[in-house]
Image (tube, rainbow, N blue to C red; front, top):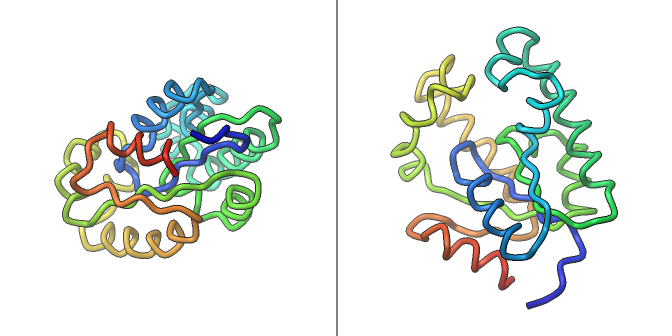
Length: 169
């Protein structure tokens, strides 16, 4: 296995498993794990849903960008799971590709829909949009996520198989 000298940045739609997989990859590679949503929550003292409700999405996105850019400016490699909307930001996407090892965890719409009900209570975008609107968002984001240099199709893979694929690339 090669030495990890860049931060592994996991991108993909909400609910694909970036946090779960990221924690396992970090443990396997003996790296620190960070989740951009959790970093913002810790800074503000509110959940992502509460931040959206109280301060709005623009406020959240500004903090999110600052946290991600800070993580990517650190000298020590780590594993960083991005919130589903973070990679849409041009600056974040460019820096993740340039300074990080960006990996798109790709899930099909059909597979994602199986997880949607479990995600709804904590995901602001799922609460305020119809299935058609979410599908449109899903498709639009796929185009941006696919700019990551590495893509791993997660359908039909176990968490352990995805972790192994990340370690072996």
